Image (cartoon, rainbow, N blue to C red; front, side):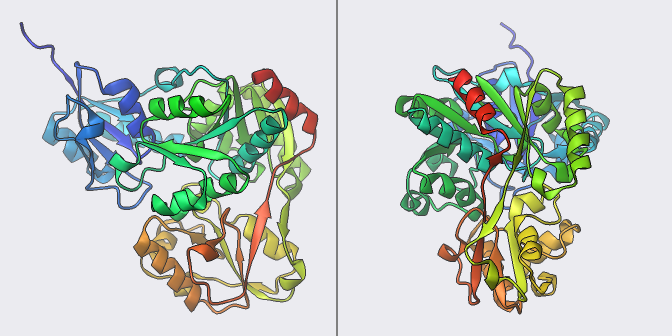
Length: 440
């Protein structure tokens, strides 16, 4: 019998959705051969291999991971006929540039839909997604878990993947303590997402194989909260799809992928940070939401900013450290730390750029909108060391740390420091409780 010809495929990724899409859609297909993944957004992914243990019997050598910059040459070298998009938080224009590059090199371009990649479970799932990284999804997720636990529900949080280490050890991860993060050698980016939940008593699951992860989470809980990073689509079919929007980036809700898809799919849309923008910005965003998704319920919320000692900020020269992904592929120029410095009377916000070391300098070179704040980048030991050196070499009176974790646990900070905290505060708390109750 003549073997059916195979569609030779490249999956464009960033060590997250690309692995998930492969596992649930491409892995067992005999009419498709995935020749490689490409990587972008995340450092130190290129040159690795998606291991054979995870790739399955059709890929005994595993699947190589190359740089996205090589897309055209990879299409030519491997006779690729299809390129599949599998990462998020990028503009529509960026996606179409990728499509144009693929098509010009001789391949078709494909984007899998949500229904093709969402895993169905047996327990209710509340999916918390966003239109952009840094919209306030994390504090919204924490608020959802509070509501569920107040209802007497046993909750498991499942986080969007961040498998930046040994993939064979990260198939199904469970985090119930800081010691779990230490043992699994989590990066700063991972800890920023896991640690606040653990501090609340929540158990967090993450990893590579999300069918297995869902099974494990369902065995321990009667309600699942999907914490969808990088403004990605849910990996699980939700009973409530909640999407957070950001009036600081009005217009992005219809210009980014797959943020617009999330907005169109949403059952409930949260307009966050209402207390930090002009009312006209909120009104304009609400109008767009109603045009794009008239069936969704809209809920307004603040993310009030606090520090333990506001007087310690007044009159000081302050170095502000912000959440890294919010500034990088989230494209923000500032975050909660910058707002706190201004609100609590800092004399000056110190520019860290002249003192940036190694890859931290590279971040400033790539993301030109970042000028007054230091992104808390830490995808590996070397980058953490460079972040620590940048802080040490920057002259200031106070370090304002606006990351979701206590960086003092991971870095030696040789100056007085103060953490900035923020949680979700809904304008109508009953509305969110009702939406959650109806979903579970």
